[in-house]
Image (cartoon, rainbow, N blue to C red; front, side):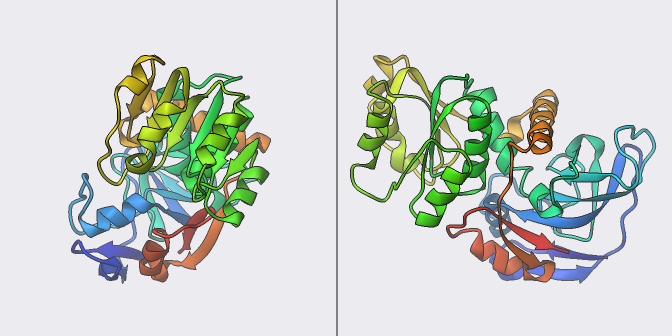
Length: 321
């Protein structure tokens, strides 16, 4: 079968399409014919060698994907050949930038018939991150307000859809007209251009002066100091992304009993992941979750995908094996 293989850390060019041996499942394993593989920014950092978790070389990249079960190993009970599934990262996961994926049962979820394989490949990291940030770390409740700060990427779009379906008042920011249009279509109650002066004051005015109960922050090194000044009583900032250091005034947390909470999805336990992906399946099935696909590229164009994923895209970049 064909797979992308990384034999040394470096630029996008270190990814090569190679013919590798076909896979077969052992006990507890599931073999999936990959129909679409999602591309995530962290995979580009990982490939470069500048990521906290470095896989042993050589390796096949890719946490997210979707396809059809080809075979199952002994002890597998949730899946059978012919099932449509989507994959998310976990121990024993062979990488989705390939024609075949070998994954443990716990790293797969059923894919509803109303969801395309490319949409399924957009779920694992972005939508699970959004759900984990909103409910497991953010403890979001119906009736609260949430700002998704930098919302036009995969995580942001997922967060807007999930939060709207859960009964929150949803504000989103994006610097492009296409991004703001997408956020409104996906359920945001109001959108703002974070590249324009005074946008944050306009967001706070939209809360009628109450402040924001929850902020999902994609660029904390730029926005955290400002975020803390816009929280309601017992408001929470959930740090999803940051690219450097930031200076804040801790007094901005004191009078509001405010929290700054960080996380990485890799810290989620098995029970949490089961809860997250059960909720995502239900949202796909009932149509409240509608993953956006920005671009579909052939598997051989993985290097281009790793360049494109660093730029502003509305939706997910997907590789087609």
